[in-house]
Amino acid sequence: MKYQDLTSLIKTPIFSKTDIVLAGGKIFDYQLTRWVKKGYLLKIKNGIYIFERDYEKIRGEEIAAALYQPSYLSLESALSAYGFIPEMVYAYVSVTGKINRIFDNKFGHFIYRHVKSELFWGYREVKTNTGRFLIAEPEKALLDYLYLNLSRINSESDFENLRFNEDRLRETLNREKFVKYLQAFEIKKLKRWANRCLQ
Image (spheres, rainbow, N blue to C red):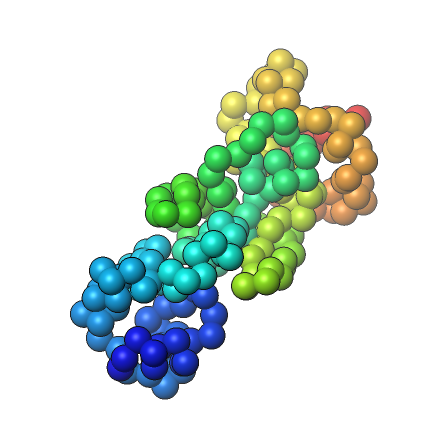
């Protein structure tokens, strides 16, 4: 296969070796390695590549979706996107049903936090000019965050240290949905601090 054949076969900026095979192409590892060295491709993880020509167009959120599946952006990344926390977030933080993982590549720092499979829901798809990604709904992002940080929330001052924008929480959260989602976690301590977010 020549590089021109690859560009004709694969129409998405992000692709895997499996995508090439499924599209009817035959590829060898040495070819991909050579194209990376020549600067035609960027390797973002073993078996996952992007076309260098598309580098400026691709969003980090799309890379987060492609790196480790299944996953959806949540926790600090989603809380920042919804204006629930004041801090800028310099990593792409996602939730996965698989084990915790961290990746670093040209696009940034990618963190994946494990939740049990029965809590892997409450997200929506966002389509971009070059692809797609999944992000937690506001209610689920907040609950995911409280759930995975519950061990360090033991007092009112601990809760205050989370520095939630309480006005923004009240404006954005769908109370009925939030309460419904909260019930699915079935954790008494979580219920206490989650309800505090509604005050």
